[in-house]
Length: 136
Image (cartoon, rainbow, N blue to C red; front, top):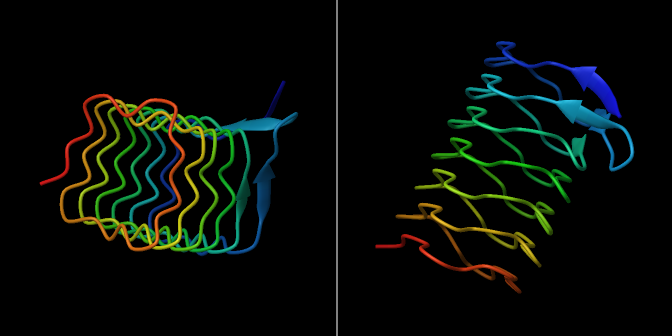
């Protein structure tokens, strides 16, 4: 069941802090959405679909993304500090330069994810799939 369909929307620079967009039984669709430099602190995106979404420079500090699909998402330079990303699909995600301090990634799929120059301080990983992660 899809709660909201935001696919293809441009939410660049929008301030959407603290909003409940999605949870696991009512998922929101954000495929191909542009969140460039959006303020998304403390938002609830549980189970949301973000395939190929653009989060360049977005602030997702303390965001709840458990079970979300971020396959092919662009998160370069995004702030994800203290966020919940457990059980997410981050396959082929571009996360170079992202702030991943204290991010929870339990049971997440990072196959092909790019993490160059990412802040991985105190990362809490218990991955199910670590094949082909790029970190230089």
